[in-house]
Length: 554
Image 1 (cartoon, rainbow, N blue to C red):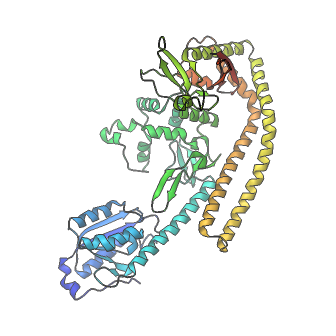
Image 2 (cartoon, one colour):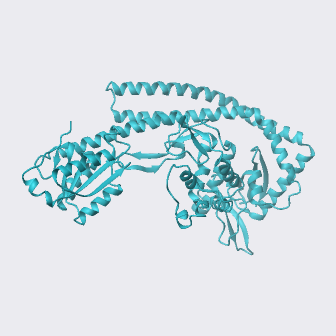
Image 3 (cartoon, one colour):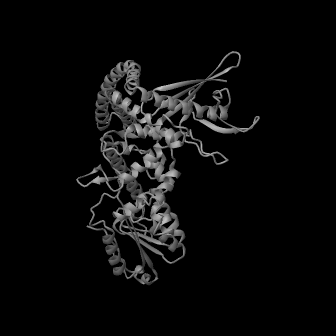
């Protein structure tokens, strides 16, 4: 039964002087009956109330789908501006929570903004009217409304964490290249219309090209951007700034950040990565989490790219260099790194006697010899070494492909034997720890319910435990995969032999060739007591990371 008011006497005499604004709001965090709490029902209820009191309804403002925890609501902002322009002097809502659930901000409106602008406020069902002396309960209702929202927020977050740990997809829109399973909205299926574009993007990246290059190729190939596909399928009626400028061709313009997000998203390897951002109640997302803090569950859906290729792309993105000041492209961008500190070697031009391009350690350049040594390698020297090594390997593969493949396989097995035994022991130990953690979660919950620990401590311990669980499960999954890969050694070796045979007569290097054949180039440096520098260069080929070492003495 609604607690509405009948106004008479002075209110009737002043009825003609009120210019009323009706404000309605509904959001996902309102756990209310959809019919009684709908925007239409709020509006009808308040319009009838105003009509009964004889008040003129100047405007109706409604925010559908907006939380009450902040003031970032378009129609609320419009109403507040109308109040400042003196167009409104009476605001009516169904209840106090419709105006807002943040007790500080809502209290500031009622206690400061409305009185300062000569506005009377009525929360019909809560019995609050700022013209009467019956508003002592309002601050407490504000606090209760916020506490309610906080409780709902915790429950929703816990629900999302549980779904994340199960590997369920919880996003509003499926990642580009996938669609939601109609029979299970938490499961992803390959979208045959857009998946080829994702594979094309990764193909460009594997050839050593960055997001800007890929963006230009997608535009030239007239591949519509994800926003256009979402709009076509009725998911979101949003247009990019390029579509607004050019409705015909704007759909083919991709944003740099969208391509980078696709290239970095492990979803394309068949994994669901969740809990990527840090969220705070009332504030929302405050920062992105580091990838190692994500909850990642492998093997949840069909991959669009294999994990090996995805890993190669990540390394290229991390160490990719821009063209130099003169505009020349560094062929070895994303491939060459320091063997001591692990940072990239950057290229620059010296003018000692004549112009010469050299690579040197990024750490050394930034912090000096106290942190790393120079690792100096001339571009032309590196170019010749890599070109020669590719030709030598290609010639050997053509001469006796079986012998080369067997040598690669035997080398891998010899290197991995000790690692395999250690990994089996680690897998068993990690499996036992996962079982212990699962039992710990149950005990934590029981302790909270029994009152032995506070909810705050429960959340802290749960977060720490779940993080360790996720890390261990990912580690176990990766370990099992590496053990399974042992069977594929011979197959991979023969694939590598076949792929390199065509390069026996190669005379020049280009970025696509280097990125196709080379996984990384590692430069090591030692300095003798007589200050002689010795540089060794490891060339790791893509399909099998077996280093080929070249020595350079400086």
